[in-house]
Image (cartoon, rainbow, N blue to C red):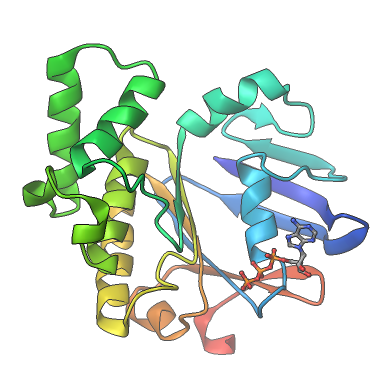
Length: 225
Ligand SMILES: Nc1ncnc2c1ncn2[C@@H]1O[C@H](COP(=O)(O)OP(=O)(O)OP(=O)(O)O)[C@@H](O)[C@H]1O
């Protein structure tokens, strides 16, 4: 089990966002998080990478850590085992694709130049962007930038990828390609958890579906959406 929450409760400031929720993620699963604007999807995702604290929980384990007890200094190490992807890509705009990826590898302890270059080639190949190494982010389309963001998330061979509305800024066809790419990644054993408003994707790329609604989280099957 990669993530296991039992009766967890999440607050933002004084407001209870999700109460007594249960959530589980296992290896290689493709998990959607759906729900209306403000229903708590991002808040839940943020607790996985310790951007937001859980307030209470009977059990809350993320990648073998009890996250209610995790020390601040151990959070970077936890995040290194995850890939995190956002709606707005969050690439560094002053440097090339190669340097965006190089920067992350250096920051996470990679030192050998040939190993760095090999890994950059591998992740660019995985997302179909081998030709973009020397491009600046603004020279790429939104879909291409999101592919680079996915490549960046893959660099340290994460056990889980957390994607917060990764297709929110993309046209429908590009969005479909990105979801196909994310689903493909699960075949290597990596788990993908993504929040989305893009309900038609759930039929095209079936997965486990959780819905945030009225401060609760419910696992549903596609037919009940
Ligand atoms: N940093 C914050 N401080 C205080 N309240 C916040 C903060 N971030 C979010 N909230 C509140 O928490 C609730 C849940 O927000 P959250 O972003 O988790 O929802 P969401 O389901 O991801 O929405 P969306 O679909 O718009 O991304 C909202 O009422 C929001 O106003």
